[in-house]
Length: 147
Picture (cartoon, rainbow, N blue to C red):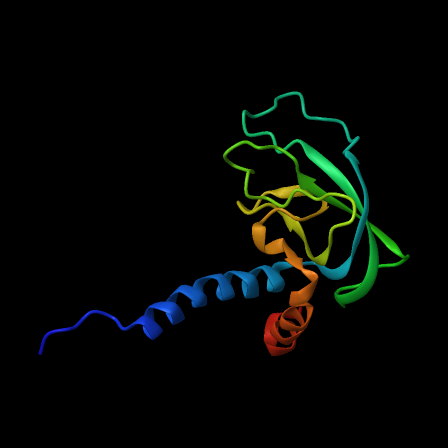
């Protein structure tokens, strides 16, 4: 028996599984998951290390007005979130937040390579979701991505 080419439905299904698994993994790893609106952004003011890599993330900070907390705990109506503003090959796919962005934010304490970051951050394309995906994120959290 010879294997024929995969049908279109199988190919579409396989293409959807990987991003879904990546999102579920990012939800599991997230310290906090919130929905909200970016109010402002600014360069992150913490001291920079003496030795900067050519792949420096160029941390910026966003203030997000929190609308809902989906995972973890936060106090107050706003939260400070870091993001790599660099366009370097290491960081070009990381979310670049701007005032008015309305979404679901998966706040991480490590970068995609497992290294600690200086605060809660969005570092992967999966860490910033459109607000229209809130119900989907909730269903993934309910099905096992909660800590």
